[in-house]
Length: 149
Image (cartoon, rainbow, N blue to C red):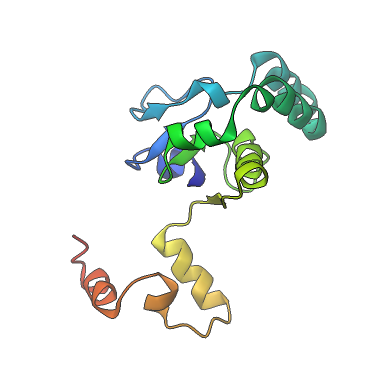
């Protein structure tokens, strides 16, 4: 399971919106059980109080749900989406932490192949690039040659 946002991953076949409202052009799955309540979302937009928002989100949304059931309903390959870009405060990051703390699964922000390649180039990994990407050498050759079927 991963997290992301509409403008980066709305067309991902595993995308699942967890926002109260999604863009009109979004055609993927929606999972409203994880949507924040309007009143504290509005308050956050007015005052930016992340601590209050997080407490209310736990109290009014997450504490009413079973994390194992949520995980099962979303699916292990789900990419949960909302509006904010990766570096901004967002309820999907709270959901990721909740799932990790509750049932021990790691939920990370989605990284495209290009993101991973950039990360590999700027890091000090001892792995070959194809290994870092989780590919076999044959898969990597096909990727480079544009045969990504």
